[in-house]
Amino acid sequence: MTLALHYLDTGGEGTPLVVIHGLFGSADNWRSHVKQWQKTRRVIALDLRNHGRSPHVPGMDYVAMSEDVIALMDDLNIERAHLLGHSMGGKVAITLARLTPRRVASLIVADIAPRAYGHDHDSVFAALRRVEEGSPANRREADALLAEHVDEKGVRLFLATNLERRDSGTLQLRIGLDEIQADYESIMGARGGEGAYQGPTLVMRGAASGYVTDEMLSALREVLPEARVVTLDAGHWLHAEQPEAFRQTVKDFLDTLD
Image 1 (cartoon, helix red, strand yellow):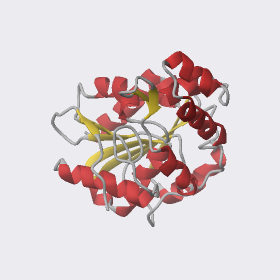
Image 2: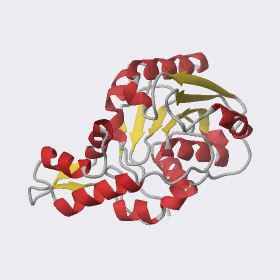
Image 3: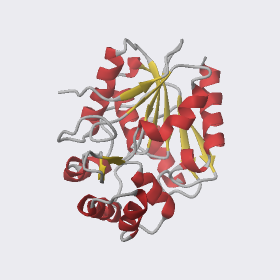
């Protein structure tokens, strides 16, 4: 069963750009990019299941998540869209493109390859559980709890975007942490769907990230044969580390199609 996802819609003309966040992210993380892109096109940024303001349900496999996105496109009467996905969202976009290529005008994949990855979020889960248990009164307290398990300030700031103030006055997580952790194997697994997506494709990767290495490119092109690969001077969160370069690369790619 598909879910009614929460989303932001700028309105506008032409083929829309649908933005799909990564693990522990949300549409809110993309507001600054959306503000710029909406000057020339309609942009929709969504919250995947168990993230942001979307419902919490069991099951995080890529077919289910891509079907949620298709259902949203149907509800908005969008026949075809440009898809942009970062990390986990990139796998959702690839899965959607393989399952229903006629709905995809182009594909933009940010720092992820269509393959399985190792388990490297143990410290993040521990940090989020600590916040859950600690019920911090403010963001300073929340950061101190996160810091017990995560050293990197930037990662802690990103995780803190999942906090919201409840009626009790404390900060609580708004993500479906139980559901995400229960199906973590699916999230770290390969994308869904079969065959290759033959449409125009941009793959952006961070030079300091290990998610899309040179050794992975041949296998990547088996699934995305039309992929143009662009490397930015950044790590995995390339859209946050190099925002202007990221936005411009996306705009240039879409402009060639328009």
